[in-house]
Length: 209
Ligand SMILES: [Zn+2]
Image (cartoon, rainbow, N blue to C red; front, side, top):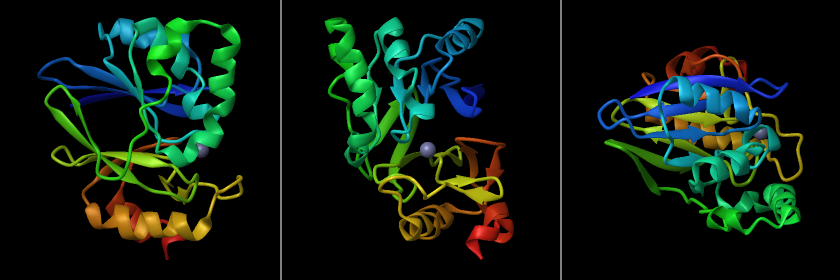
């Protein structure tokens, strides 16, 4: 598996392109904005993505999803349905355009805990990690020991919980009960900031002690 991080929006959200080395199938995770920048990167890599994956409904993770979906005629997967209230503005923006070509990605293909997604020869497991948002999910490539963690855990920090329907204790439970047991060796690609490992965060992250 190869991955390429494309920081998007003024919030420097890590949009991530994942590619199966074997088949060259690729997906775009959290295209939050700057769709031209994302398309150019895909062009440079000579990749045509097969789907879009979303970790959670915040605008900096979803803002360019409709545009990328329309451009490549590909479906959007995720987040978990509890984030529907966050996606309404995007859905209504689309409806305002009266472009029914978009209908193939609406309704969203909601994902649930334990769902699996194939990207070429790679299998990603969906893990529901509520707290930052109620429908937040992460994507885990078990064989490759890679986790795409969205805004659940960061290098040295954790996701904010001062948003509507955020819950601090749910977030801590998601990290401690669902993520840390995956293993210290897991490299995670967060929604913001630099890549880290679960082992490093288990010991050094001030929010987990
Ligand atoms: Zn967020």
